Length: 257
Image 1: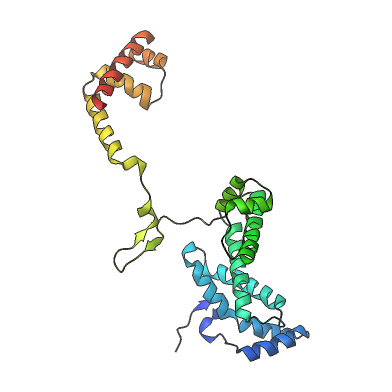
Image 2: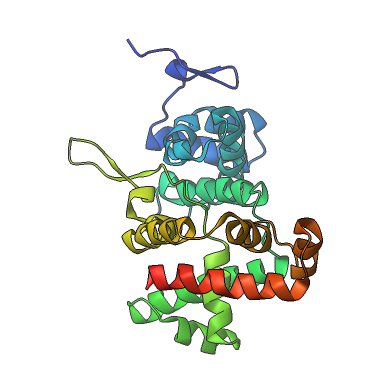
């Protein structure tokens, strides 16, 4: 017995499954104006929507929302399906459902991409598909740019802009043990050995300074104050601050080298 899972109030375990012959008859009836046949086609293909939204489980979106959007794609594919073409309905419907969900995710993405950039990206994708069909090989960005009449850099930038963000915690490999995440493949400039060694050397150099020199460097380079401001705070001239600062920097730099 199938487990009961409800999405948007629909018990997915009770969804009907239509055979190919039933589908063809219902399409004929719908195209003759039978709205009940259209409703049966929709209900009979909701499992198709369920199978598609599983691909988007890692996006952090509500399943109910994706299901509703997927149903819009399903209805569009039902209304536009051509029975005369020798194509299974699922083959035609799945890309339309995916496209509808991707449009929803794109339009609700917190990272906004300008309309002009999106237009270039989608035109580039259309040209890419056409060139693949014509040449049976993947076109280069240069070839797409030539067809579209825009600089190659704009093609690359536009296509990058419409890519969906990837979570740092998304697993990219799992051999049965601990998974490897995206963040494991990124280098951390702040935690490189060279930076760690430099930090130790800097602290050691600061220890060699007297209290006044330490104070001057902290106020100048950690608090962002001017030499004049430092001079007023500690009660010496700006020229003295400058002299002490230069001497202190030489001590610290000598320790780092």
